[in-house]
Each structure stands twice: as C-alpha cells, then as structure tokens.
Length: 336
Image (cartoon, rainbow, N blue to C red):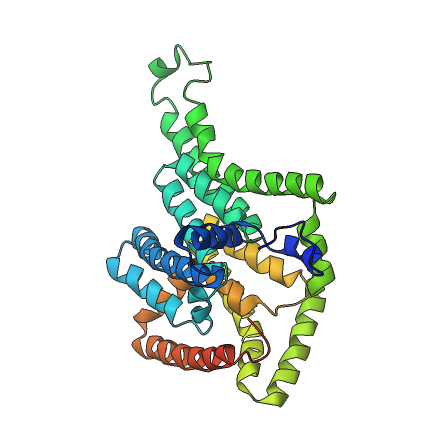
C-alpha cells in the first residue's frame, strides 16, 4: 500500500496494477480499522453480490426473460475460476463497474454510465476493451435517435434547427466510452508526472510478467506448450493451465454467437478483451479474465434449452472449481 513511488524493491512493478481496487482496500481498511486483506475480501464479496443482481437485470432486459437472468448468474458462479470473484482480486470490482456501465448506458443514464466506466478503467486494464464496446453502444443509440429525429413529412423540414440544441443529447451517448478513455488519460498523465513514463503500466507488465505485444500465433503456440506440460504433471495446479485454451475457444464461440444475434456492443467488448490476451504473449490469466466478460455467461445460460448439456456444465464447472479452490488455498502453483 505504498503507492506507485515507494521504496520497496518491487515498487517499479506496481504500475502494473490500476489503482482503484487497492485504494478501496486502503480506504475501507483505515475507516473500519481492519487489515487491508480483510477489507479486500469484503469489497470483493459486496461487488460480487451487486454484480450478480446487475447481471440478472442485464440478461433479463436483453433476453426478455427473468429466468434467463438468474441462469446467467448460475453460469457465472459455477464457472471453474469463479472463486476468484470472492478473493482479493480486482475482478469483482471491475465486473460490477462494467455491468453498471452497460446497464446505465442502455437505460439512457449516460452520465452515471460514464462514471461507472471511469471506475472500471481504473480497476483493470480490460477497460481498454470496455471502451470500444461502449462506443459501439453509443453509436447504436445515436443512430436510433437520429432516425427518430428524421422529419416524416415535407412540412417538417421547412425550418430545420441549425443550432446545437438536439445534437448534444445524441453526442451524449458517447459519454460512457469517453469516461473510460478519460480514466486512462488521467492515469497516463499521473505516470508521466510521477514516474516519467506515461505507459508505465505496460512497462511494468513487460518487466515483471514478460507480457507485451506478441503475434497471436506465437501466443497460441505458447499455450499449447503450457498445455503439454500441465497434462504431464496431472495435479490440481495443472487444471488452471489446462483451462487456458478452452477459455479461449469459449470466447471465440461467444463472439460468434453475439455477432449472429447482432449484439454488436457485447461482441466488441468480448472480442477486444479476448484479443488483449491473444496478443499479450500468454493465455496464462485467461481463466480469470473470462470472469469479467459478462456476455459469455449470458450466452452460456442459453444451454438451458438442452437440459442435459446444461446439467453437465453445472456439475463439471462446480467440480473443477472445487479442485482449483483447494489448490488456491494451499498456495499451489500456478497462482490465478
């Protein structure tokens, strides 16, 4: 909790972590008089509860079925890596912020959606994927408003309004995307002032985790190598590594389903988030990162149409999660 300019040996790597989650841990810990770890646990738990409610609302509004909303929550909770959402990781806080941004934007609360997107971008770097997703949503809403404003008769165009009045509400649809962009600009400005490197996040990732832009086929080749080694070990820790490629294929399949349904904002968000891992040199964190791609679980909930398949998913997901959780509490490798 020393910040980005501390004196510890690993302080140069702290820019690899966006600040909102750790700041929230510090604020709550100081206010409640508890340890920062305990504060992090409660922040994640509360964020998970709210995220579950928002996921149900979003899925219900998009699918038109209350039952589908809660099934999406079930798909999320039984996903093999879902225990991370109740751990001291930033995924829950990002998930609730991203969901809030989409829900509020679709309801026309663009100012609040921008604030949620701003918070999401300061929580995880996956806000870079949230930005184009919200931009596509804003463009859809602007286009719909523009079409509604087209004059229906010749008499309506006699005296067109040439002022900005009426145009600003349309442009306001882009506020959520601009909120995410503003967060990264502010963070880059801070890094430039405090460290002298506006891209300190990516520098830290490259130095500490050997992550940087890599050709997608190189990343996939590396994932295959990880899979071969994990299959040879046959222990609980290998389960997490074995899930890397299945999660990648799940993301690709989800993007395909979303595009087929013309859910362009969600497809853009999931596609960009998956591309970030695909071009990072490793899929090592993908089972964890999939948790923040909430449209994946709305798509998975559609398996309820095939009860046997749905039941297999729930059982297998729960069993894998137990194995990963046991390995996690034993501090087994690899960490999520």
